[in-house]
Length: 520
Image 1: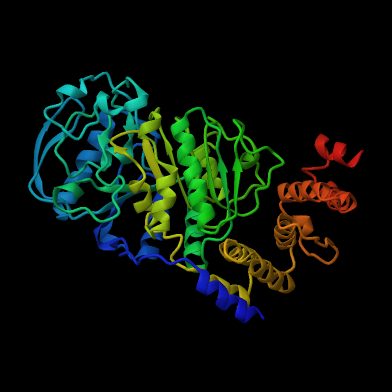
Image 2: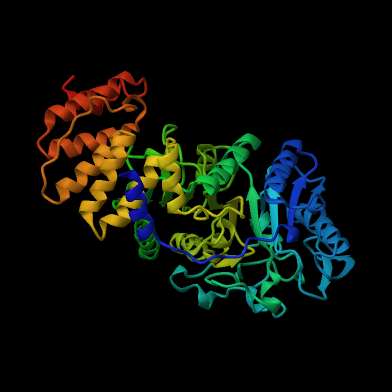
């Protein structure tokens, strides 16, 4: 039975084009020799991805997250450029004479051979604004800078020179130009590789987090997802203050749903509430809260291995050391990929969640998809995660074969995804798939999925939790949702029985809503 079900699922699985892997030979990793833990992170990444040892550049850098332009230029940019020149990763001439920001004059004489630059834990995060001001309309002919006429609904922007370190390093192979304002990202919306002068911008990414162990753990989650498949659900938080942003997130939700990930939407101007479902988040996409709160700010809302997590807010990555911002919180919770802003970026200059998901669906790596989804560089954004990571490199057929042979705690979600793909064509077969899985690995999430499909099609369903293992560890938000579903469908006694299982959990025992629901 299960073997035939797997064959059916393989026939309905989506396909994707094969893309060339990122070249480890042309990837440089930058570490801070004053932070030994960061060097360990760098070496772990390099071993996994086959990046040559000679491609690790370790410099004596400041240990503060925020640095001045003089520190950036003298401690990072200038010495890193010289190292890359010596190793023939870039071509050009350096004049030791420095500009007002401390940058040595650089004249490129050829296209760069470096394609990716990865910074790691310990490398400074952001460059504070200087007092050097210059109108972007008088920037010595830099036609790639964004001008005010291109801002659309954003209006006038303070063209400051505050920036993320990584975003400024993307210009390392270019002549120094005015640092005020944002620069167009040539990779934005490009589904194929760039050629000639267009690829002079070096794509960057960062392996970082509240601690080196947090960064390593999140990165290892990406590697697990590559080996076993990205499995889980999608949660999309809409209801932000701007129509454009809501359209982006709505399109992103439609994409994750179309990829087969069961997708929950929060459509109000609030975040997912503390009793919302949060089991196995493979995608979390949301906005517009400055600090983590709501359901996905709770410790029990752990992300699935390989999870893509993005909360769009102006100051989501002002620090990576404290979990008071969304980005470091996501990394601590296990996000394999996330992104945020170190200063105010303005909405039109931020990463587009819909394009991020589209890029991943095109089988881009996480790093490629991030640059595909980001309109500008030399600005406030920072990309966190292994840029080599491909969430869809291990297809649904292989995931289901693994489930049939030896299911793990996320195997059920591969079945759920395949069932959702099938449900659009054949709801009865979708229930059959779930039923076969329920016999193999009984669980609340499967029982609920079967009951929902039957209820949606006006069919009577049976509900019994006896003998279903794992109730004591099932996501409490999922239990709340199931109980609401059971109440709605006339099964109040079953709802109360299930709800009482939450009383055994220390974090739920004093919950006033739980006591009210149980009449305590």
